[in-house]
Length: 93
Image (cartoon, rainbow, N blue to C red; front, side):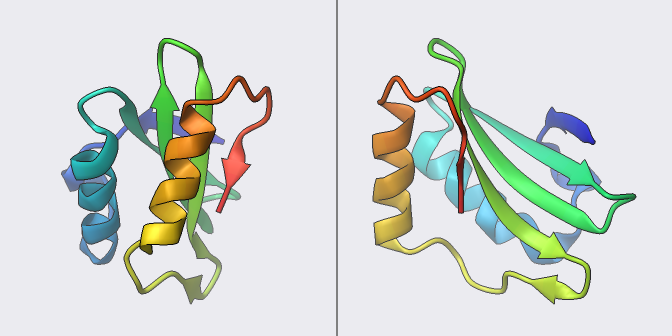
């Protein structure tokens, strides 16, 4: 597993819209991360509230399966609620 702060040049361009959406929605108060697992077969976008260490991860790629769409308003609201909570576990979308 490898986690790093999001940098567009380190993520395939097909996933930039989702990372950019997360930055617009949460970037002023949260950190946007990328997570790579399983020798690059899995890619996640992550949002971390640094003051509470509550996090959300969004699965973008799992082998040949890829998320093609941006996050829905319902998903954004779930992320917002989770980041404001005192949860101990990450929310995974």
